[in-house]
Image 1 (tube, one colour):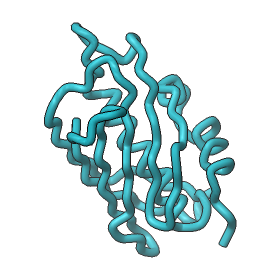
Image 2: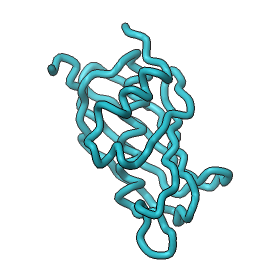
Image 3: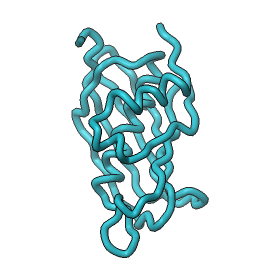
Image 4: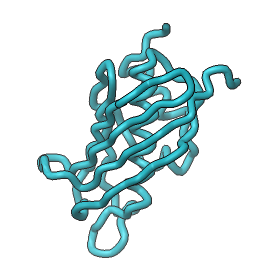
Length: 141
C-alpha cells in the first residue's frame, strides 16, 4: 500500500479531476484514515444570484472530496467512478468558503460508500449532506 498524505492529495486535485472541477479551487485541509476535509474557496464565479453558491458546484465539490477520502482510506489513489450521489440541500452557502467533511463508510474490493457533510467556514450547521457510492477500478490503467 502506498502512502497517501496531504502532499499526494493536493497533487491529485491538480491532476485527476476534469479541468472545470480544478477551477473550483479546492484544497486539502486534513486527511484521516477514513476520510478527508477539503475547502472550496468562495468565488463569485460559483454563485447564482445574491451570492448563493450554486448546487452544481456543491455537488461537484462533495464528489471530489469523496474521491480524496477514498484514496486516503485505501492508502493511495486508483481510478474510480461515481455510481450514485444523493444530496440534500439544507440552507444556502452565501459568500463564504465551504468545507467538505468526507468519510468513507465502507471500502470494499469493488465498491466504496461514503458520506459528505458540507458547511460554510465558521458555521457548524450543514449546508448539504451527500451519500455516495463509487465503483473501484483498481486494475484500470
